Image (cartoon, rainbow, N blue to C red; front, side):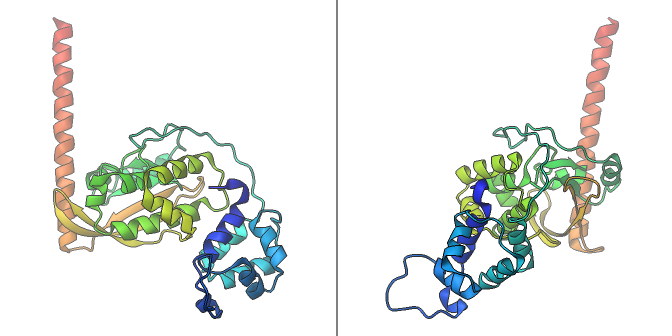
Length: 306
């Protein structure tokens, strides 16, 4: 990822996805050397000079007018989120103090995470029947309740969820809509990052996934930009079988892009029944863990008294 010329990188990727015939350009008899539109074709359709468009792609002009950007968005068939992303790449942004670190093979980030507001922690713990977790804009999980962890162990603090979904085979087996989910997740990562393409955490994550996941490398190179919306999560859980849960995300005000993800099943449905069974299993497991901890504590106390 070339953080020094994010605008040019975006323009090159998006023009490669536009078929000439869709832009009203008739193909000639010869072979085209580039996929999608040529630079001069983009410039002609946008009503700007070829030399000026070349300067934009090469990063030699980083302050195009809003009129030029909107014309380019029209030529490149960008929707509203992608157009906003294009405009954001050309606008100055405030500097931010960041901490960076390396993520180990477990997928757990070594950087200090932003604290989750105590009220949010109390809220998700008070939802025993609804899986819920908090993630940052780079999909690092910061907090989760017991039912969310019962759905997937990767819904656990310290795990990067996008990394897990792409690289963990058990996660791929869990997600019945893995193809759709990974495509949406990668487009949402770019939308969440916005123009802040040089954030150390983003650079770290993109670098690792580009090396370890061919699917990530290919989809990231498309520069798709789509905020993650409410969706149905389709799972094949090893304990309760197939279930479908509605997924909703809520922005947490007063934080640097923290998101609360909540899942629920339609009341009275089989999915709700299965979710209840999974919740009972999670409670039983916690009770057994507490009993073992108490037993171990009693043994230590007995030894101390001797």
